Image (cartoon, helix red, strand yellow):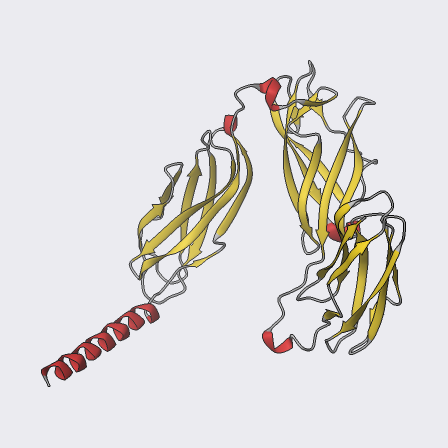
Amino acid sequence: MNKSKYTVISVFLLLLLSLSIEAQTLDRKTLTWERKTINIGAVLEENGPVDVEFYAVNLHEEKIAITDIITDCGCTTVDFTKDSLENQKVASLKVKFDPDHRGGEFSKVIIVRTTEDIYGDTLYLEGINMPIPDNIEMAYPHRLGVLGFRLSSINMGNVLTNEPKIKYIEVHNFGQDTIHLNKDQEHLPDHLQVRLEPEYLNPGERGLMIFTYDGTLKGDLGYLEESVAIKLESSEEKISLKLIAVVFEYFEPVPKSMENLVPRLGFSESDIDLKDISSSRKVERSVTLINMGQEPLEIRKVVSNCPCLTIELDERRIEAGQRIQLKFEFDPKGRRGIDHKHITLFTNDPINPVRTIIIKSTIK
């Protein structure tokens, strides 16, 4: 009986506690921030600390005061508005980031607590830290004229078509003259822009060559390579660079209720095992593609990872419920042993826009 009584009391106390926590959660009155994440791009250590500012407004009737700030790194210090904020008043957080000798991308956390929010809002300061190299000659081994680069090519990484991708590349002026980019970069394609920071790079100085790649203007998808030429001011010399990017079409997230309505690509099989085959005989197969959605499916691009694969596609547009054939011919000439090949399809299926068919074999 007593045990039952204690159980009831315990459940009651837990209920009160949960209600108290819920009430606290509901009573939170947070500041409204202009933005909660600021990306300061690439930070060269020799340029010293970087200052940024976050702004927030009080949209509540109650006065709100910032009580304390918590950061996850001593390299980040914050000065903030100490006065109580009345309705519609704006608060300012001045953040100073002091770069250290650790390089790479960073995301610093800043937690802001107030009189009306003990849990705190979380802000983020992001960027790329670029410390001073210990050995300049070894740090920039790839020379193009008087400019030194860390790598022989520029890898933009994954580029989405919804916004241009920015890449910061370290350069060092090993020459005797100040370098400046020509304003007229007629050799650059429309989808690519480049600028130098600082605009005038003095002898013996390090700077940033900043590339902006627009995936929409490129008008292509998948792994792409190209050679680009950048012209220097007051010089006939051009900097020739190899540029690499992997471009993906961007799609807005699809609500669960819409998943059966949008275009959806299906395969009869996506993992094909040709088993034992002869290197002297070509092999042909076909795969059935079906649109499992209710809107037309468009195949934007089909590529393989080997010229030994010849691909034939009946159509590029598949209506709802329609099936088409993707035929391929594999020429194993000159190959031996276990072999894997890929066929990649880029479509307007917003849930899985990039799909791969794997072709396995053992070549004898």
